[in-house]
Length: 615
Image 1 (cartoon, rainbow, N blue to C red):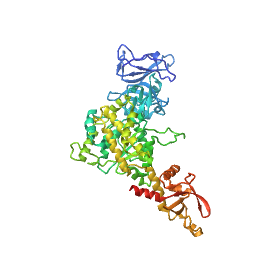
Image 2: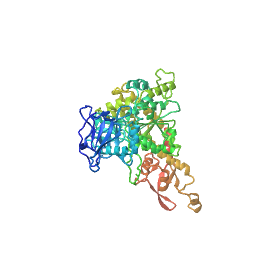
Image 3: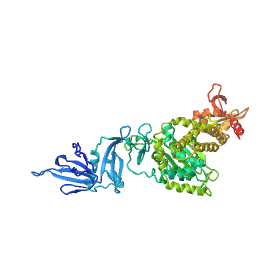
Image 4: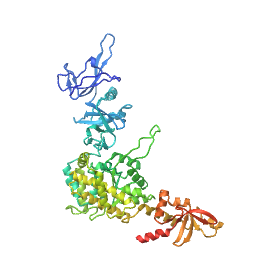
């Protein structure tokens, strides 16, 4: 027990807190002149008059005098030992709270940053959380009111920054907040503040050495497994190198080992509860992304997601922010934000999943979550490390991930928060190594390489810190394998996926509507001809390269629906499919049926010739 001289009574008439002494010479029970006040007894205390006071928070007050009778000294036990150690608030000076330190039913001291908003109303939510954490409360109505008054009355001089999400806090990436702890040289200045103390996702079990033997060592020689582990380490690295959210989507048949790679990756920061499923709405996945800010978001089996939501989810995860929503009063609520490294699995690619809903994958989506096939020698594995087959190897990894988890991530954060090396320079060197010999002029291979380079950098850092036990270069080699698999998944070693999609959209429109919505520009102009063409999209005419189609503005916009119109026109012109006018404009003036019309001249034969040349 400790003792603090009582202070003045505040305007709430709640009284200051007094921590009881451990030295029997002190009397923690306040006299008449020191009341009303609060006393926190860490242990049971017996006063000189023989009265025993149980451990906990006590309110000592005065019952007003009645006539000639003096005031009556009264006291009330509120709860088991609970101290208010600091005032908490976020970096913007909002979201105030109090850092509580309490002893639970098992006798262990715990801390929790309580949001002040939990004191509103009847405080039943607050009482429920405290009870779940092992705090004993006075169940009476008087006890409920006094608890709220006690917590509001305490305004310690100590101030701490409160964060409501996991991830980097404080200044210059020197503190990383997890639900149950803060890691880094500035850890004492930051606390994680939430409406509960539950941290099932970021749990730990076993030892770092056990994790290294059971998870990291078997990953050597297995680039799919190494890439998964690198994705887990990459979450905290994104902010340090200025990279956006995103990651990789592992594609493979059932029982190949892709989910095993994901489970192994989850073991870096937590146990099996760390893993999430694609089986959720877009809003539900938004909440998951926020929960894993500056960490890895692991999504298993894309086939469980509604195909109509896949494209939206991929964009949302990469953009790092949720939807704008209205609050109860009609005003705009704060937008949920995150920065996360994503590891996804499925038997189908992102493009295939979206196609099931009649959607077309856009280039921006394709480079946010890279489709990487995992088919290797033994399912997803190359080196079985003495196991008889792929399933046996997968089972060993799964067993290890249930026994050893959470230690590697925390050890990594301890080192990373103290690392002052130029990580951007190292990142660019890895990116250049990945792009060696690859035509990246269209930008998409460069963006894919940049994403994989972050994963490789994280893995190399974990190796340099002594976390993985791998040889230098193991992580970079896995990224090279992943990059080659991504290029192969695109169907070509180089080229512009967006250009292919735009050109194919126009060709498909011509193939579907060429006979019904286009007519001969040089043919007769009469009622019969006009009635045969409904909802006209343009005309066609013969040329030296075959037939070219003259699109109206509305027809061209319809054909390019889903693309940025101006950008798509430039793409078509660059591909040689759209023939611009002499004035440099996308449209050309044509004389059709005795009138001048500005049209987009599309030459399908140019696209077909290009496709035959690359076949």
